[in-house]
Length: 247
Ligand SMILES: [Zn+2]
Image 1: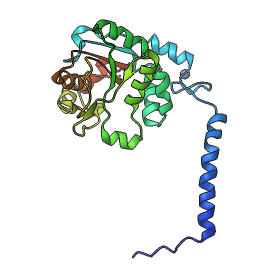
Image 2: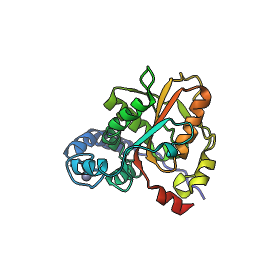
Image 3: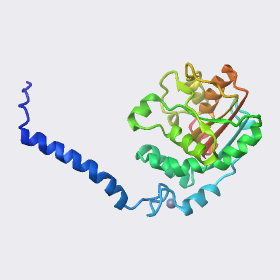
Image 4: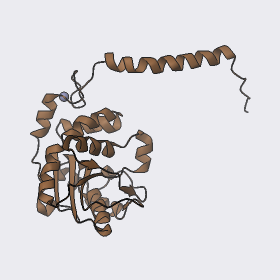
């Protein structure tokens, strides 16, 4: 049985309005006085501390071997291992809603982007294109982590970033799938947005490199549209053994 709700008394409406306004005023001050914690180790002081940064950069080779390149990609690189503080920081970014972490993590991509840019060649600078996030995950989180990482990497390199790709359908979370299932799930799941200008050289940007299936779907869509040179960069690489173990 439903009851009609009685209208709120005026004093209560005023109370809520004042409280709301005060919280909005206080929130930025709280952000200023609350100590900033590292997304990798929770140490106070910065969003991603120097120790975590050093451990991340030392954690893995940055090149992706030619035989491992996803179909459609000409060059690729990652910053470090997912088993380093990078993995912790990426989980904090996505699952504990800390979009501010995209700034330092995206900036870490600068060297990798420049290396891939050199390998790709071409007379015009590449455009950084984030891998489009699944719309359901986007709604859950309220922000697009890959777009934020690409924007930060663009700011750190002086290149442009552009949202020219979109998902064509929902895909189950890939971490539940093995390598072959990932490829099948991502087939034609990414397409060029209608009406966008296609750059001659693109560097795709994502947070994690696992099987490369997502990069492959994005690269194939770009290649089919006529893109000449396609690279891919990710912040962290998940060991292939971990993927193989789930197949
Ligand atoms: Zn740290």
